[in-house]
Length: 511
Ligand code: AMP
Ligand code: MG
Image (tube, rainbow, N blue to C red; front, side, top):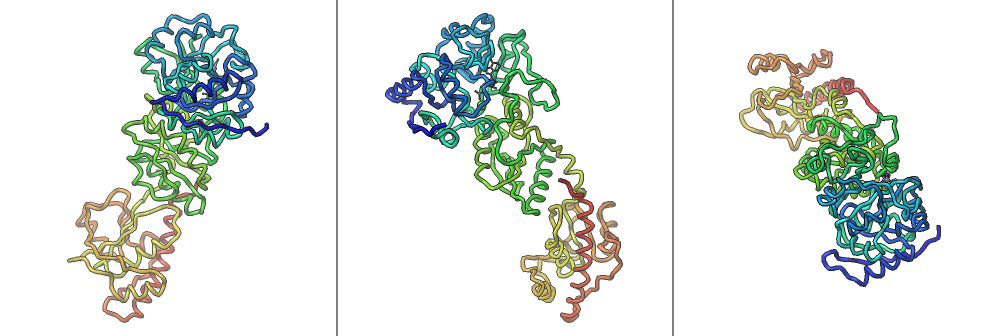
């Protein structure tokens, strides 16, 4: 295709510049392509009644021509000109949801070319609410076909910059009206069947339809990768909305999802694979590995819908090869969010439980007498091991009257091995800190006995020797010269390496 100049015109929906609209409308009447904002996503407009204009639309998007376009109107009376056998519920639905993010499918009239409908005898019609879109449709003669203004397969555009990224040089004009409001494509409702059937979920939800016309059907291929049937909206069969990286949706209850994503991101980082995480406002603080992006707040899922595509595009700018996303409940707008996420992920899902169940321990506490030498040394040695899983590693003492820095000789030995205890401050062992995923490892047997006797703990308390099945005595260097600390270090270093192997064998490697 030849490169053409793409004019970019700013437009303010609260103060519409009629000159810009007239120019864009003229372009459309001449059979040219103009991208414009709607409340859902940016549309790639063309004259819906011209076969040739539809052909250009498919070419610019690189879209398969069996994937029909939606015809946009600005006045309800115009529906009768392009659709026939319009069922009676249409009036009620239009009264509630038009103008707005609802597309309805009807039998087409003769004036609609097959180019626009992808060869079908039905036509998809929407009346958008965005004032720029409405003004443009009127200026263009009333019928504007508009698929999303992206290259086929990429995430739909929610800003004019997204359109430019994909279509600069391939279309005649872009109207830049800023960021869209909803961010997901319209709900598609097939009015040619009884009861009407949802072919694509969107901001108008099942619940909202049911309040107006009673039960509606839902195309069962939505949200299911198992169905062998083709989806009824031809466009839904394509891998869509997809970022360049492999996107995987982690599913479970939110706590498990967080733990699983933490582990997956940790593992990727450890192997040097650049990784992304799609988090929410509420869960953001729990992640610390990879490139983490906040998609919005769970308190108001509309924010998540609005950010979804731009986040997927942002990840294309980052050097990540895998993205892990939390999932959302299938209700209200969440249904549309999950539908788009699932499509972007090509239905790759990971049950959070499968990851989390391999993590018996998430915290490891070493217990020594005063938490000033052997305990902190063991903890620091373990932090320097290559672990397949992330642990919170710390140390405590059985008798700590007040916090003190680590023993100076212990620190000197650690320094000579390129480690340090300089941030250590001794702490008293306290049963309240112990959770069911805490592994307690004591330096000697007395400490273990005392813990078992004094704190109602029966599980997850071992001496280090016992846990790794190695009886090498860990010498107590207290009050002895530096060389004794050195000998103690040698023993601990070996035992902790064994401990790391044991922990790694508990966290089975997954691909
Ligand atoms: P887009 O323009 O990118 O929002 O995509 C339009 C969507 O509407 C695609 O999924 C199409 O398959 C669907 N669609 C358009 N016309 C029809 C129709 N007559 N019957 C069923 N689905 C349609
Ligand atoms: Mg699209």
